[in-house]
Length: 302
Image (tube, rainbow, N blue to C red; front, side, top):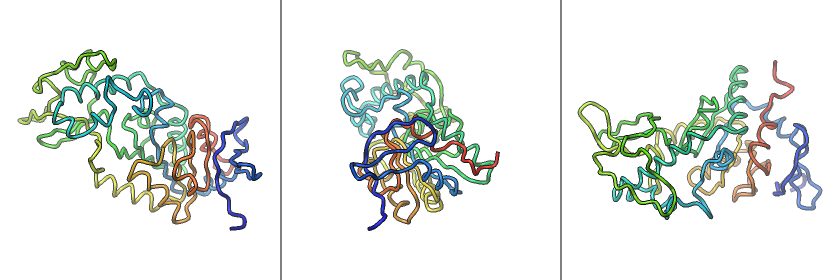
């Protein structure tokens, strides 16, 4: 189609907030940040979908690829209902380690840019909603208010008996896990008796707690999924930040939005299977590419 722009992935460098983003493979084609900013200035309901790439820039382990092991296991070995049923002590050690690691991690410029944008636009009667696949709560710590954690949170528990979901930021989450969770392959499993693992404090319950996260083989919470779908149906601009676009159903969120003609901008370190469906692709660290994209537009009232 004449005049149609097809985003092609190349790296780029920036020198100012109005820098040109070069996304061409020898075609002389340029995608200007200013063009994205025009779409941004017009948007009333912005949906921002975030994935592991955002957290990785804060130093959060992704447990993917080379070096993606805890002891001798990969995340998919432990993040399953079957693993928890078979060895709840081992699974809780893994999640205790992840909780403790997060205490030393801070929101990065991408988290902060999103939170600042949400706060600023809310005063203009515009909305920003964050739909995150991350379970680390860094968006909350950055100051974001309207956050859907579709895969749950490291800092929430769910009772296997009564089903109560509750925030829990204790360190350690129970005395028996104190000093446990060492990731070194030579570390011995703690083999904590089940009665000493995290337990429900609801009156008369005392059921075994599990991390309130979506494990491999489990479905997303239907209420959260319905709310997310409603947000995506009304958004008039969508950003996909630091996600590989391969984990379903989240991988289909942005392509479905793009399918109804809404501008979608992808911010990622590399191309993804969905890149060609989007109007914009900004390649590089999210903490570098996102802040200039979301800063105050000249059309905004001071």
